[in-house]
Length: 615
Ligand SMILES: CCCCCCCCCC/C=C\CCC/C=C/C(=O)SCCNC(=O)CCNC(=O)[C@H](O)C(C)(C)COP(=O)(O)OP(=O)(O)OC[C@H]1O[C@@H](n2cnc3c(N)ncnc32)[C@H](O)[C@@H]1OP(=O)(O)O
Ligand SMILES: Cc1cc2nc3c(=O)[nH]c(=O)nc-3n(C[C@H](O)[C@H](O)[C@H](O)COP(=O)(O)OP(=O)(O)OC[C@H]3O[C@@H](n4cnc5c(N)ncnc54)[C@H](O)[C@@H]3O)c2cc1C
Image 1 (cartoon, rainbow, N blue to C red):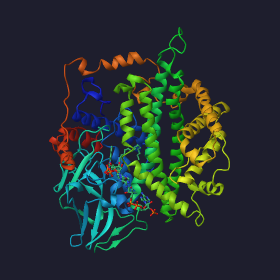
Image 2 (image 1 turned 180 degrees about the vertical axis):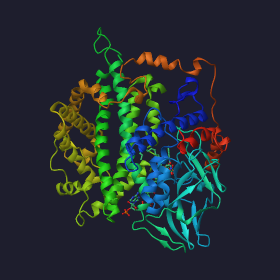
Image 3 (image 1 turned 90 degrees about the horizontal axis):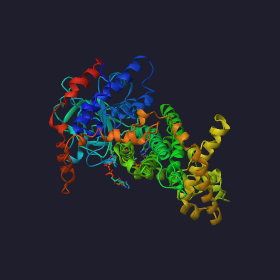
Image 4 (image 1 turned 180 degrees about the horizontal axis):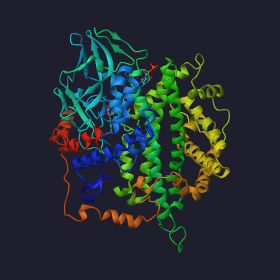
């Protein structure tokens, strides 16, 4: 059994080189995911409910900057579950589940990420040999970004344009072996490596992949929805977008991920704000806690409310996802467009808001928030990536807008699905008959705004659910959070409300007062509310947010760990670009020390024994 997390001579991750970071990540990941395998053996997790277990590990301090094995669980396995037929699931799932193969998900290319119908990788069926020929016709056709593909995965799901009998049938998914299972060397016809250093997630080992007329068996096309028969006949799917299912799943999962990161960041910033004393409220008094400043409360408290709002929303979205998928299995596709629009909208909104809130938490901690040891810069790097991956936010909001406009156009002719039923009410009231400065009044106002501009998603507060299951005291605080969240956004989006609702100047002024009252009312419970997230210090990994409040001692202890305090100079900088983007990106990628060797030693020392169940 491997010892717990090893680091180089006690040097924290921040001071490791790019290569050392990867080697450290492999070591930590095989230890962490051996736990998942142990839980499988003890029946404590299964192929259909491992989200929480893997999610907990990926958000933990052990894998704090991602894992080369993350995509295996996040997309490789869900894609097999979602797009492989039964025979293929029987063949591939057991090996994926016990990690005797490690997979990734290769869709994005150097030249295309958003417009997936424009992907260039081709899979051309050869009926004579009953094989598909995978090929990257241009440099821009190289797969670029797949997590774990650089040096770790030996299989991946590849999304390519399917050609058979001379005709293109659009993008489909294929399971493809890219490395030898014994030697881990890239297979003939495969060009593969890692793409280089990034803003964050530098332990994920994102890779590139090019095909040179690479042949795979016909049965490696995932054929749950569409098929290619032995003679090359194409059988199309019931719905052209069923192949997009893996992306919908991850968008749903990302909403849960944002809850975890936002809870961490606001816990760190709120606790630090209770410890930090700076300036005086009245001359001659002792310096006050910065948490007592209304400006500090304005920065932080809405993040506490948002963490709860996102958690409730994530749970509701997960229920919807499972409901719709059960209907898909029965052949009922009626709610697929609603699920797609909902997943797009909530992934975009929660990632954008979380990135903004985490940055605001950092700013609320002054210089100490800028220290890597605070864990806030790392958290920001993780959440801001989520605004891009799994569908760039702008593009996903446009997908939601497309669905809402279509829904509005069919308002009188079609029954509305549950999450857009409010449009009927808002339409009936036309211009929001009256404004009231209550939670319900604000929600109704936004429904009217949404109605009017058809691109705002509405906010479904689960207030009733809280009143059934919580004590009067907790209900009061949770209602304060609901009030805060609604009045905050009413004030943030005041221009829309002024444009589309009859809110008066007087009501705006009282809304402002109500907002400040709510901040004051929440202040006594602020630390208790973040303590309620129950995030252990090991999870937070932050000098500012530790439970014991020993901020300064911890800052100094961490500072003394820097090798710069022991040695003169480290580091160097990289060159800049001349505008030849794709060639330069590839040239930069090839500079990575990881690409200097065909197989990193950690494969033979850690990964292979892990995959063979020998750890
Ligand atoms: C299990 C373990 C869990 C552990 C938890 C730990 C947390 C981890 C969190 C995640 C961490 C890291 C993961 C990072 C990994 C990143 C992976 C990737 O980034 S993979 C690549 C992702 N790429 C994209 O998302 C591409 C974005 N682009 C698209 O999706 C499409 O191009 C789109 C939708 C923008 C346009 O598609 P298309 O051009 O084909 O469609 P149209 O716009 O013309 O619309 C036509 C029609 O189709 C409907 N539609 C579109 N998409 C879907 C869909 N997915 N499902 C259903 N329907 C869809 C659309 O609504 C239109 O319908 P219509 O009725 O005609 O209006
Ligand atoms: C950390 C990370 C991990 C990733 N992991 C994976 C992975 O494992 N597998 C994988 O396949 N991919 C992965 N990706 C790739 C990711 O899915 C793409 O980056 C994403 O889909 C955006 O595509 P792009 O980067 O090509 O940007 P583009 O699609 O080129 O978009 C660039 C910008 O153009 C604008 N734009 C584009 N299209 C439109 C439009 N229709 N309307 C308006 N504006 C538009 C937007 O402002 C957008 O930000 C990862 C990316 C990151 C950052």
